[in-house]
Image (cartoon, rainbow, N blue to C red):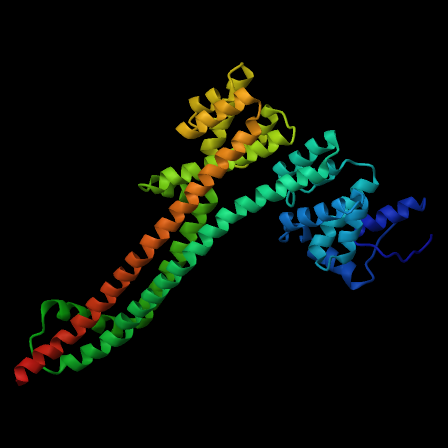
Length: 387
């Protein structure tokens, strides 16, 4: 029996080195901290992996003239994150075993999406991986741009809401009970609204711990409900039913479909395969519509008609698809349709935020103002009595 000490990224890498030496593995044990970290976590591949950053770095290295293996080796050498290093080592090991790049990507579905694998697979037929990566980088950057725009637009209203709610709770739970204690000894008849609020103050003073527990339970229940609805797609369905919001939400999903489909068609992927890939990236309702459109196309229906019959077009996008079919540049027209609706969505987000923020501030101001006025009305009444 031979005992060897190897420098390896993970267990698979160590076994591969032993196999290349013509030896048979009896047992493996970790000796250094990096290998122990990889074995101990067991969930490295499930850590956050930036597919966009990986694509940008790989595209830059390929553009510099390095081969795919040399590029992955360079990325692995500079990588300090054990999770990302584990993913890169698996890719490199698969290529060294003679597998195609798309095949080793497909073996890690938790890190590489079906769309990404499809793009790489199509590039292997034409040997233009760099161009395909450039298309994906542009695609993902545009998708992230809309998402980040929505998130950034919601930050300020969220802060306003939290601050307003905190001030309101402070007034109701701390200030009002103390005013109630002051007014209780005056023996005067208070205005009805003030009396109701002061009774609430007395109740809050006597049951403060129970109300705090109930409030925390309510916040947890609301957060869990929102999370559950988001996971099941129900939150999107609720937004879809809101007047005005549902139409723009549909346009957003259609623009994502056009952008993805245009990128795949420009990459040389057949239309049926492209529709199958796109259907896996959208919600259930549009996925079913895409499947019906795909079935219609297989029977000889053109793309524009198949999309129109299944509610996947608007009047403008339908005409642009017809132009693309006549000119033979369907992929470019799909991308232009996505560009048009992305601009429309961005303008709607700006208008919505500009109108929503003043309304939210006005509502918070009215609530706080009403509480303060009701607190001071008895004081005004006492001042009139003294006068």
